[in-house]
Length: 277
Image 1 (cartoon, one colour):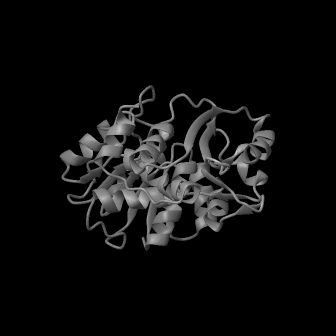
Image 2 (tube, helix red, strand yellow; image 1 turned 135 degrees about the horizontal axis):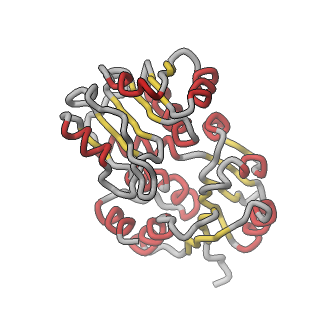
Image 3 (cartoon, helix red, strand yellow; image 1 turned 90 degrees about the horizontal axis):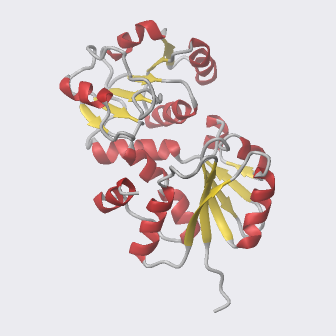
């Protein structure tokens, strides 16, 4: 009876919108595991103290969301290569030896979502077109390169950030000005919107999608709304569309497995639990 019940959670500011408690709570209940997953609003100034204190309270790890995904890297003792390359961490593991291990599972979640919801997706089938050059874009680009995509066409509303990614990731990246963003679609086998355009409360995604190839796999990382205008227009062009919720669900799998000792499944019941949160 003296064995500690493992605790995990998600930290951010704000945190009330997070679907992570519903996802992990569903897994804990459906798998019959001991443990709890708690949402916690944490300010930037309190972040170092929180990271030092939670392991002493029985926490085995955390998910990290905005605005702390970059800051936690400097607070970790160990950082995975992919988290370093992306420049952000979304998963912390509090090890038994007292060290904090930081990882980024967004790229894993992105690829797992495509493979589950676009069966037969082939990263080597042709170029990828990516809209946006923020943190999510970095994770997507890293994952696409690792998966074997030979060319990534990138367009961002501010060109400087896209050029910075080109300098960092090398000649596989081709940058196109936003005013010509629609041209990156011609011949692209994979298309990804990593911007917030089309999200509830944000401006619409207005780039022309006439260049989308029939049969291309098109993914929008936005999941509120689940079915965006971007996806509707892509499907009308004959594309195979994948919504953004699956990435959120799949990126949670590695952390849950490390914290609670069981690898969970991403299925329709989990999607329903997340959507009802």
